[in-house]
Image (tube, rainbow, N blue to C red; front, top):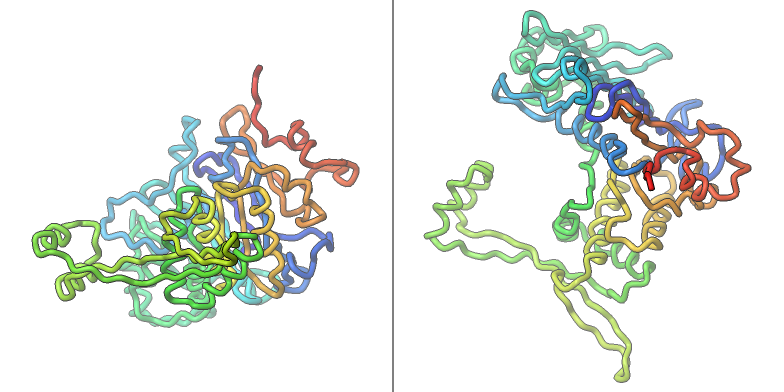
Length: 430
C-alpha cells in the first residue's frame, strides 16, 4: 500500500508537494477504510481530489503513471529522453532535475524509493527498506562521468560481482534501475519484493478516454468470477441486464492483406510470428441479455455491445477494473470518475469498493462532482479529501481538507467548497 508520495519540478508541481494516504486518528469507518499495516501506521483505502480545471489534479495521477512507466521502460538508445517533464512556467526549473519520493508497504515491510532525474538522465536513484525505525539502504545509483553506477549495500543485498557488473552494464543513464535489473537473471529477494509490487500493484491510470470495455471483455473471457460479479453489481444498480456473453471469434486474413499487416512497426515480433503461422486474427463479441416485462409477460432480448449506452459500457468497464484492483489488492487511479455516469452510480461504485473488508486495495480519484462532499462522515472520511489550486506563478498547490479548522461546525461542506472556503474552485470574473 502507498503511504506517501512527494513530487517536485514535475508538470505543474514546482515546489515539493506531498500526497498521503496516512489516516488521522479519526475512527470513522475504521473497519473498512483504514488498514493498519504496521504498529501505529494506518493507511487509507480511498482518497479523492477536487480542483478547478487546469489546477493540476490530473497531474498528481500523471506523476504516478510516469513512475510506473519509467520503472520498467527498457531503453535501447542512450540518447532517448527519460520522459520526465519539468515545470515550464519558469526560466530556471526546466534546467533543474525533477524529484520523486515514494513510501510504500509490501505486506508489513516498508520501502522508501527516491528518484532524481532530468530530461536526459537519472541523477540519483535509491531504494531503502525498514527493518527497524531507521531505513536500511538497498541500492544507490548515481552518475559518474556520464556513466550510471549502481552500488549495493552488500550486508543487506547479497549479489555476486558478475551480476552487479551486468546490472551496471544494462543500466543506461536514461532508464530506471528496475528496467536494467529485469534483464539480469539473478535473485535479489528484498529488492525484488519491491520491484514486483511496483510492477503488479500500481495499475494504469483510468481516464475518460480509456478503453475500459475492451479490458472488461478480455477479463470476462479469462475470469468467470468477474462475470458473476458484474451481473450482481448490475442487478443492484437497477439495470435490466440479466446476462453477459463474451465469445472469441477467429477470422482468416486474406493473403493480400497479410503482407501489409506484417510490415507494421506497431506489431510486436511475437505477434508477427503468430500471424505468419496462423494467418488469422481474433476479436471478441459481447452480447447483453436484457430482461423486460410487457403485456406478454417476461421476455429476454439480446443486444450487442455496440447498442449499449455509453453509460452501460463505462460502468461495465469501470467495475471490471475495480474488481481487478480488489482481487490484486492494487492501487487504482481514476481521473474524472463522473465521466458518463449518473451521480447515483458514482456513489454506488464508491460505496461498493469501500464495503470490501480486509482488503489492501487503494483507490485514488479526481472529480468535479462536489455532492460527494456532503457524504463526508456518511460514506467518506474527512482525511480522504484533497484539493489542488494553482497559485499566481502557475504552480499547483496540493493540500488536505483536514488542514482546515472548524470542519465540524460547517453545515454543508459542499456549499463551503463552492463558496471558495477550501479553494480549488475556478476564479470566474463576471
